Image (cartoon, rainbow, N blue to C red; front, side, top):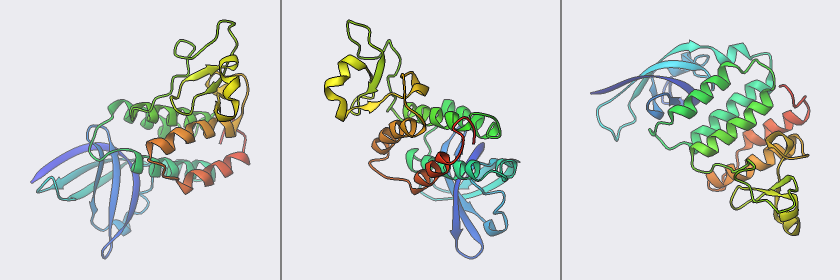
Length: 236
């Protein structure tokens, strides 16, 4: 019997059999781990997306699903229960990572980033931090964007960075990108551009997330951005 103990963040859970649940957790040392939680229907509060847990994963063979025995470390959902936007943010991030991360491949640096994101979800500038979380995920998956002046495609006249190439993910100066204006993505002010707001930020990250997800669209992201347009971009 192989047994692994770790800390993780719940991504998703769904019913399985009579009273049980299958739960997907992004863990610190083992990456995305999935297992059967016995009596999961009685642990719904614990198994909400975004909650920090400690767990033991047991299985006889690597090819088996195995069982997961989680204990609550921090009730993140309970902390943000008053905020529909923050709650939906947790659901979206859980769904995103469930589909984006390969199973059982560790990403320790990104785990630390995500842990900080969920534990500070009650803080200010939540939408901006979500945008940078998406950027960090793209980098972890090998789809990192090159948005700094040192990485950008610039011109001899020093015009400001204004576009991002939808193919390479590299920032492009206004003068260099102008002939291809209709094909370029806008580099929003949040990421070092000169203009562009809430929807431009998530249009940029969304384009490359679709590439990373093999063109899969996540309905939870669309719903979340609809909530965002009704709130203050500086906070959730």
